Image (cartoon, rainbow, N blue to C red; front, side, top):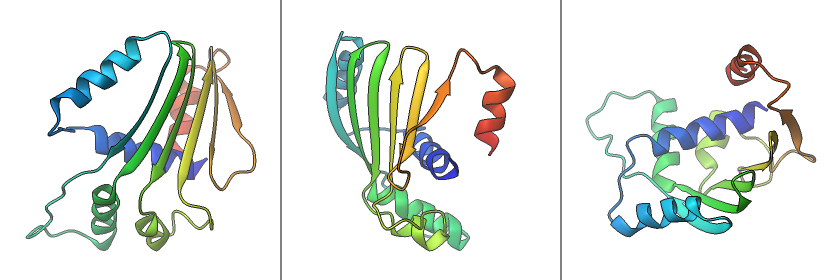
Length: 146
C-alpha cells in the first residue's frame, strides 16, 4: 500500500506545474478523456535543474526519478470503467531510498469499476479493493497518510 501511494504521490508531483513542448499532447489527452472509450500511452518526465541547490541526498534521488520519467498507460471503456498503469522508467532512485525493494520494475496499476477501485504494485500478487461507497472522507485521509 505504501509503495503504491508513494508512486501515486510521485506522479502527482510530476504533473504539478507540468508543461509540454508539444501543444497537441494536452489536446490529445483531454479529447481522449471526453470520449466514451479511449486508450493512450504517454511518457512524462521532468527537466530538473538542481545545480546550485542545496538538496539532501533524498531530494536528489527524487529529482533523478522525475528526470527519468514515467510511462502512463490508460484504457477506458467509459467514464465509470478505467485502467491506469504507471511505470517508472528508472526505479534505481526508489531502490536507493529503500522505498522499492522488489525485483520487479516499479509499477503501479489501478482499475476503476463504477465506485470500486482496485490497485496494486508490481510487487503485489493480487489487487487491493477500495469501495468508495463504503469509505468516508476520514478513512480516505487515513489511507493516504499511511
